[in-house]
Image (tube, rainbow, N blue to C red; front, side, top):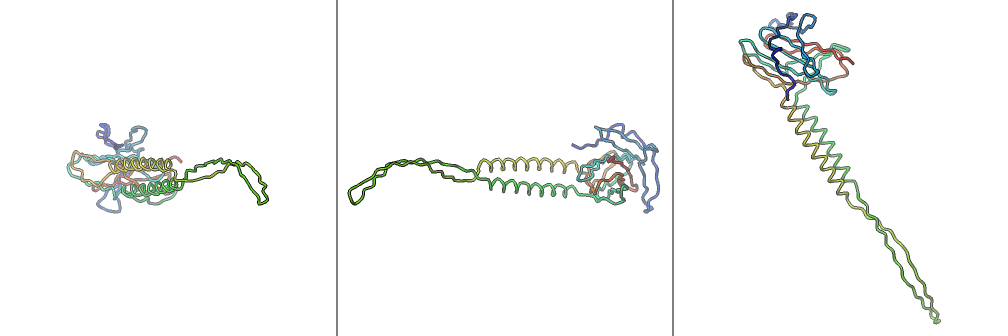
Length: 247
């Protein structure tokens, strides 16, 4: 389920912004400055920043997943022209404690990485179960009488009894069955998660007037960033959203 939706308040809110010309004369940079009145709203504990210009509203929330930075983004086109929303052009910059760019990560790469890790985990589980052996111990008791005759006509009689132990081993089929069930459950869960992730990922779209598009975009996570700035180019504008993480 997509975590960002356009609420009525989002559509009606036209936020004051601070703007400046970028290095490219055709683009205008718009910074979401809350001190200047850039709107925000909390939804289910997540802070969503909202920036509107010339009929285009961009809403963003940012989440540190521990492995990636995830930006949930929605773009509403209330202008009179169609606009292109291209996630591969979005940029995430760490401004503190270090200054560096954090690369865009395609959702297909994330799914493939998860599948690779799961394949290794399944292989280890299967190998471990295959090495397990089930041992069976058998105790055997024997007894009897022994008669001994000599050449001079004498003889002797004796009795004996004893116990012997033997141990055999065979594959532990119960352990193999448990491992196979664990692997099946893992694969089913991975398939569900991969499908959900693919469904909520933001794709390249041309958004016609009165329509919107939303989804999540992932970026590299290097170290523990404190300050981030997300840039979302839409049409001839670049919407910028600063975020601060308390570490």
